[in-house]
Image (cartoon, rainbow, N blue to C red):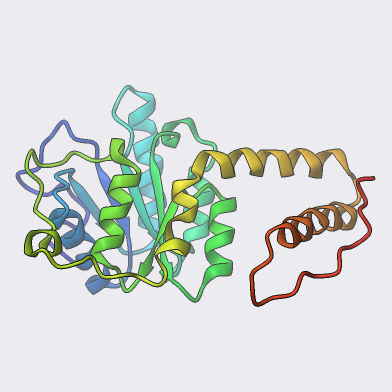
Length: 236
């Protein structure tokens, strides 16, 4: 594991809140660190390679926060760990006051969208796809500007400096739609939870949600896809 594993990087600003990377693949952890530094992030970085150590670190951090210490700035969580899962980490952090201001970023493959959606239900704020893209890191930092200590003059974007157009990432919209609409999605999540707790029948709740989803799809159909036949509206 890298030289930053398990402790603060030498020379980091002591007053900056920490960043935690939970990643068992050394090359992926190193790539994340390089991307953060290349983007001008100066926060101390800790790297842990398994879930047991991560949970112990977070419990210790919670006690420190409760004693008046600073919260973590951000946690990057690999969903696939050798002993625990990233979901275990998210569950521990979810709802705990010590981590309310901590940015939780899932690191996963783009083909694991079901896992990513599940991560959001456990409180994840955003995700970065593997293999990590420097542009994704910069977008994350722009979307959540309050979680980083940055250099006064962050490294210039090489594409912008050369005048070359920024390359298009075909997954860019999928990767960051949750980030850009974080507050709206949280309100929607709370509304759906209210529906679930009001209606005892789980299947009826799901049918209502599917009905509303189809209504929206039929209102804004894609040009190449014919509208679906709407269900009987159960809300009427």
